[in-house]
Length: 367
Image 1 (spheres, rainbow, N blue to C red):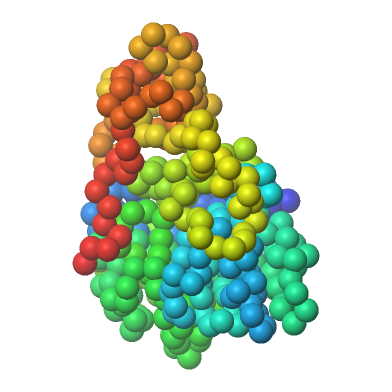
Image 2: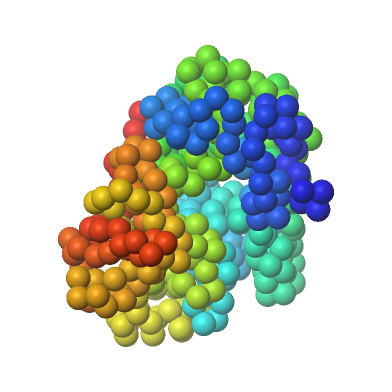
């Protein structure tokens, strides 16, 4: 993995014996010894887990009218939130396909902090740079900041041990200091549990990780890799770009129309998405719960009771919480909730029921 980028915690992961793999061009921990994905997943659902997600992109748009400019580009409506709040949004192409999904943090009308996906950061930044009016600066800060995620019911106790602020509203953030160092504490995450994402400067991410790891262990938690992050997000029905969102899978198809500011005057892809929404004739994202033994995987074909191909799995895994296979799939609109279908996995038909995610109860707003 010599050609892959490394997080500021790479040597720590190697020292812990983590299984490393390519994720968006970065060498990242998939799981750690001592139980692996299932143990890490369970720790997050029941106690707390600590993730390194420093591979995620970081960018800043600043200058007079910066927020209005971002709002005219990305799908969601920044006017729905105020300074100190965050919002899920998407960067779309003119045909409505999703270039990337990201979180936008509104600092002020002149300052927006963006967190895109690792592999798409350069493209998102380039698109914004090309469109930016005079006086608006777009900066790629990918390797200027780390990102650490503390997720699980005991997240507040972990952050409190470090003297970091806790208890602010879901999808809000606080800019503070830890041992004299500037950090952003965001009430966000990708697991469906109560949690926080901490954004420290790149060169001190290791010190923050060490302190958090000690606090997580004291609360009965574990470091967790991107394998557990994937099973956790799939249980919640959260999309992964490249699987459930892509240049070929629009927000309308993915069931993410809620993250589109339809009443805005403009955003990239508005014309195509508005027409698609009105037509109501494309495939839609649904959940599948396997009723027998077996694990669905991306690209598996979905067949209805009459033997007709009605869709394809986009994300599939074993749910450690439910102890059964689950999947997200793009299905024809003729398939409705409660229908029985089959997923073709390696020449075998897995029976499944069509459902609406999440597959487990959300805990993001819980205490």
